[in-house]
Image (cartoon, rainbow, N blue to C red; front, side, top):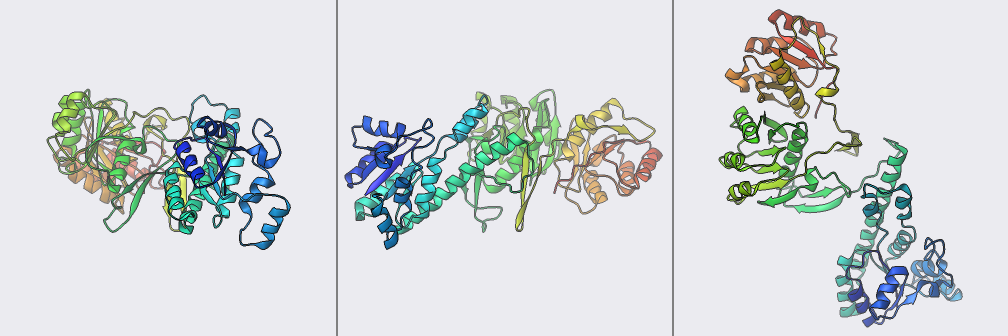
Length: 510
């Protein structure tokens, strides 16, 4: 029997090759892998001895040869195939152990050149893997060092690798090459700046198996992109607490999306992916107190995200109530001592958001397909603001309008957010009509509503929301505008002395 071994990842290589040799298997290898095997004192045949042809073009061509692929693809039970490889003196290859040029690692470097990326596109490796995986009834193929032990165990036990194992390994190979090709396709597509090509391929790497999904009867797993933004939930470092659940991860992602809106010290509390309280302060402790007071009922059992290091003062406040998760760029030593007293409290460290050079895509699955769109990065500073009413907002109202606008884009539509004095005081989410969302937010705000500002994720189709807000005590409104009945809402605002700002930009979130 013969094994072709050519790996960039040398993990576990020598013990595995030793095990194959002990089973009487001849080793054929190339380049650096061949040198590593020889340096270990093991017998190995060079690829040129098999092909009768030297490696050429700086190693670009070495295994693309009939003596290799004939040995891989010949069906053992096909008499005609066997006659042909005997005629051409081709020796069957029974094992292929290959992993690929480090394309992902290469393009992960910020200073990588286009030429370096291209040279790390493997051609011979995927070709051998695909040939072996196609003919897995006769060929055992390994792309992952984690599978070496299973192969050796089965060889030692019975002299062969089980058909079920070979099929499983073949499936793994095609997943591996598909992911590899996807990264290359994504890289080159980005170079061409083609946003929505005729086919859209993505690949994810499994991060963890979850106990269950949204509900206990649903199975689930968590996957991450191979090259990811360090400020995302997929790259979070868990410092303490129980394992994250499906809903934890989903809620934590929502919290991060919101906290990235702020530069000043801010705290966001999230429940079921909607913000229930947001506070901005001169210190983190002040910001947390405002977020907590925004809705002290809903924050219970929620997730809190900050954009500053959690200090001891803030940690003392955080430990006073039951929280599922606290997310921060860092925790002081004193804060960790305080918070880790709670055995199950999950502490996640996530790097601060950096300025994105490219707007990312968000993928949403639907029955039979997927919707792909740009992330909603349009913020308050991007909007062309227009004061539509007779009265302009005061300086304090402008601050409240900005906070409401930063938050309402992250609330499920239809959405209304009330803000006052550096905190949200009412959030109406996911209602079938806008005035319904407003009524929820106004009721939640209670006595705080007087002098507050209201933000809406989309235009008012009629003036009823403005009237409800005015009667409750709201003094300023920010909304996209764009309704054929805009003037009705503007007139209603003027009637009550409300300042209304139009942004021209809607923030639906479904």
